[in-house]
Length: 268
Ligand SMILES: *[C@@H]1O[C@H](CO)[C@@H](O)[C@H](O)[C@H]1NC(C)=O
Ligand SMILES: *[C@@H]1O[C@H](CO)[C@@H](O)[C@H](O)[C@H]1NC(C)=O
Image 1 (cartoon, protein in one colour):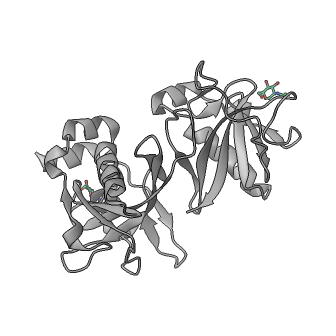
Image 2: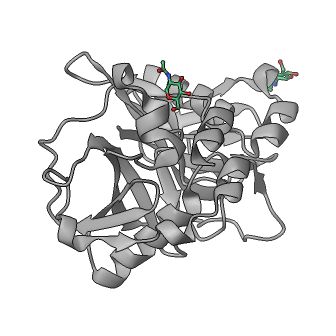
């Protein structure tokens, strides 16, 4: 049954080039929400064996019986297991956790990051697909505070191999009230694609476009307003606060007219 599942579902392998030049496996998302107040930042996919793990093997919390393979087929990821492992990390007051063999959670405050990461040549889909580790790999996460007051689809998106965008919330962006300078704007509306956003459930592609513009302009913050206006800057003015959660002013994780989803550029 598991073999069939893989042949049908695990189709897309994503990867990145690490600083040593070899391509290492990279997840689809840089970060996941795990509770109302916490998120889990992806720290990479590591080789794992019974003798050599990023976290002590004694920290095992086994959720393999809780895996809902049908749900994984639908979402193409193991987010429910990641959340449950993350919530157990919060209960245990651990700064990091890892998911190995699809449903085994491990925990610690001092990860052994000297172990080797899984590379593309070794098959990311097989060893590090679905945002978790496979049979001999561990996907490692850091527990961090969640900053948004309103719900979002994703806590962040990759911009390129070395940067990701951290969702900082939905704000007003007009001449009356703005978080990023009104002059720092690049109109990418011609690339707005609602068909793709509905299919993906988010506008991660537009976030990526605006993030690249921010990086080109040396900015550490950016935002998407009116579905395709990319604003950028280094000192966001958040003094007016996030807009009310309802009615929704930011959808697909980008802003509607006169609203902006603010992102911070993070290093991978
Ligand atoms: C990688 O692993 C997947 C899942 O086991 C398999 O379908 C695919 O053929 C493998 N790719 C390569 C290049 O070996
Ligand atoms: C932004 O681009 C879109 C699509 O190219 C265009 O229709 C719109 O007028 C532009 N907006 C501004 C303010 O230039």
